[in-house]
Image (cartoon, rainbow over all chains, first blue to last red):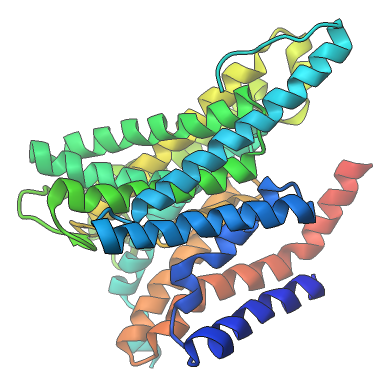
Length: 116
Length: 304
């Protein structure tokens, strides 16, 4: 718990000292870093390697969404929706794989269950 | 000082803040009893608020808006039901994603459908009427607050005893609790856990839709981006604090409602917004710290 608090504190330091050079009210809340971070950790199933990949993917989605709004006037919320849909899909798929494996162990054959 | 702070208007604002939290928390309670960890209350409430305003605007009727909000809440809850029950995915991952989806979807649809950003307000949006109950609403202080409410408000108050009877005095309620506590035993007795879990999640979606309708058509008559603003999360805590018991949930919701209502009042008396905004969360932490001893005993009892 202490370590996680320390690391989270580093994010705040990075934001204030590294990027904006000032304390902005609601800077962390608006960006939603904490929630995205939680989802990244859960999606990568608490393994550091996949966490880097998942983090990069989410960052790309968010920054890409903002860029799309600036350049072609597509609302950035679309990126948020996409992110949510991706998470829901992946959360379902992990299980599908696990279930196939257990089914294979139990019945000695792989069963394909429905669409993803 | 105290006469300035505590009067019937304060009680009224506490009840107003309490009703959406209570409705959502009751939904969460049903899910908790059925063994589904439900943290997408916030998202479903937001969807309910949006569809309530949209329905009320298109049909110029608050009743239609409320019904649409309940339908939309239940439909939206199916995402969690399918992902967590049928697919056995992690309910926390899916729940957080559902919240994100609701926030993105409503913020995206707001400018697309109504051409405004941030806040949507229109005279065509019909607000929920208040129905005073004769005699009872004349009781000083509590009368106007409790017995001059909207339909969702009365439903919330009636739902507390109704759900208690349902959970603890009916066979279906017993089976629902069985599914949550001992799924295998429930299944051997011929109860289909999937069915009960789906029903619980959909019921929570319906209650959250109702909470959203009360928020967007009862408390105010408008929709603003992210207008549930953490009430769904507070409802999640209320379920835990109330130990998923209707009376406990009512008490916890009342505590948070009081913190919110008192916060608004203190704002009027010159306290900074940031401090009063933190009040419900401070109440959460204090309540959790105080209740810890009891939690510990329960944990020991369940472990034994």
